[in-house]
Image 1: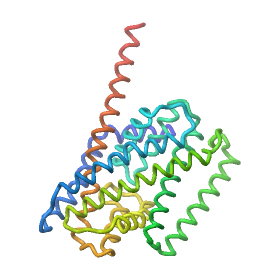
Image 2: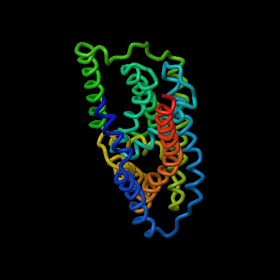
Image 3: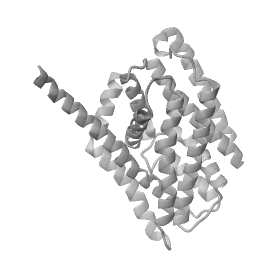
Image 4: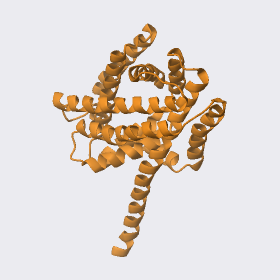
Length: 296
């Protein structure tokens, strides 16, 4: 865990990583948008507003509902915003989960409880997404379903091994009760709707329209590719979303542009909310460190 914290600290303070991530998110739309007849920014802004609420309000509240800890809403809002920025800076968004676990353990939770908190949040999010995909009528290939089942079996086997070898890593607190899980699923449904709003906005900006259910189905089908890490805006998940949109009738250029715009606009709230929170935390830490010698 200490090595992960050290690595994450280097990533956070690496200007090269930040510049590369921003350049990738900007380069793809810069290359695709000129080939479109017309692009309007207003649909993107209209779709971005509900997505910001879904990502930076509903998701932190879902995480809080599934976490058995005496931590307030503001704490979860800040920690989640910070984790999203770090997630954009790391392949596969892995930095987000590592940071959330780090923040929970620093707040006093045992490592196993922190892992259960983040894992339960991810699980409820995945269940909510699967429900929307099923409702949209999207059929996933059998080989992908078999792969997901194999991954689940591997996770179960890993838990059994950890329980025997390192029981201290397992959560000490009970699992969230059904009421908390239902609350989390409701918040997850709101977040999925906000994703549909953003995708519909980016598609509308390129001059193409799809039904919300079709967009959610395409997004859900593309999440399977998220198992393979990649940079934001140029990951296998983004490529799979492009393919899914093309399968629904969207031209290649417009599909690439819509997905690229979606990836690019995600940086603005992440840098504003997560960056400001990290900056304030760093400033408070320096101020506290400077006050110690003065008191001594």
